[in-house]
Amino acid sequence: MDSDSMIPPRHRFVKAVVQTLAARCGISPGNRLVLAVSGGVDSVALLEVMAHLGARRKWRLTLAVGHVQHHLRDDAEADAVFVEQLAGRLGLPYFREDVHIEKSGNIEAAARHARYGALETMARKFDASAVVTAHHGDDQLETLLMRLMRGSGLTGLNCMSWRRRLSPESSVWLLRPMLGVDRAMACAFLNEIGQDWREDHTNEDTTRLRALVRKQVMPALKQAGPAVVERAADTIEQLQQVHRFLDQTADEALRRCIFSSGSSLILDRKEVGALPAAVACEVLRKALFSCGASADGVRARQIQSLRKIASDGRGHCRQLSFGDGVRVKVTCSQFIFSHATES
Image (cartoon, rainbow, N blue to C red):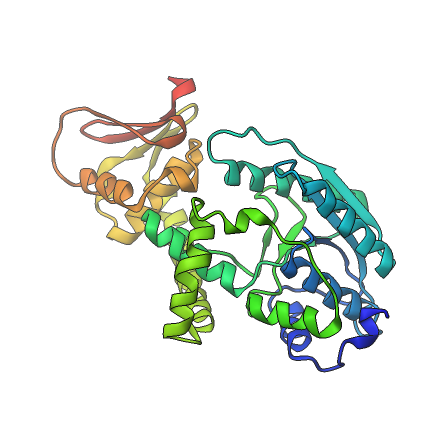
C-alpha cells in the first residue's frame, strides 16, 4: 500500500513540519527543492512528509531526491539502492553523487564538506533554489553539547539555523524544517505509516563523540527533563538573535580597526583593546577566519587570550600560532594576521 494514503491529514509530525516550511525556512508554493536523503529514519521521514505535501495544491512543490555516497561503510551502497528505490516509488527524480574521503584527520568534517559540495552540484543540476535536510531537535542539542565540551564561543553555540546559504558564496539555500521535532517523533511517524528505513551502524560507535553523546548523554538528559530538546531549541534561538546583533556590531568595529590588508590582515591593537570584550573577541575571531582558520580550529579560550593581549600594555613582539596554519604577530601597535603559506 502507498504510504502516502496512510498519512493522516493532520498528523502531528506533518503539522510540525508544515508550521516551519514558510515561517522558518521561507519555502514558497512552486519552489524546486532537492531533498537530502541518506536512508536513515530522519531523512526518510522528511521525504515522506515533503512528497505528501508537495503534491498538494497549496504547495505545488517540484521535488527531487539527492543521495551522497561517501564510501565510508561496507553497506553504504545498499543505502544508495534503498533511497533510489524509495524515490522511484514516490515518482521523484533521483540524483546521486559519489565522494571519496581521506580516512585520516577529521573524517566527519571532511565528509560534511564533501557532502555539501555534492548537494550543491545536485541542486544546480535540478535548478533547485534550496537543499532540504532532516536535521532535527536532537541533532541541535547534541551539537550544542559537543561545542560546549570543545570550548566554543558564542559563534559556535549558534548551532544550526533553520535557513542559511549552502556556502557563503552560494545562491543555493540550506533549509532545515525539522529542527522543531525530535528523532522519536520521526520514528513514530514512519512506524505508523509502515515505512522502513536504513540503520547506520556507526551511530553505535561510542568512540565517536556524537555517538557517545547520543547514546549515553541524551537519554539521561531526556529522563531528567522530558522537554529538554524544546527548551534547548528556545535557548539556541535566543543565542542566535544575540549573535546576529554582535556580528553586525563586530563588522562595523572591524572596519574601524583595520590598519592595512593584503596578503596579511593588520589591525590596530589599541583600537581592538578599546572595544567591549564581546565585540573585541568577535573582531579577532573574524580576523582569524579571514586568514583561513576554521571554527573547529579556534577555541574561545584562545580568543580571550588574544583579546587580553590587545590591552595588556606590553610592547615586546610576540608570535602566536592557531589551527589551520594561521599565525598572529603582535607588535606594540598592531595585530598582524597571516597564513603560514604567506609567511
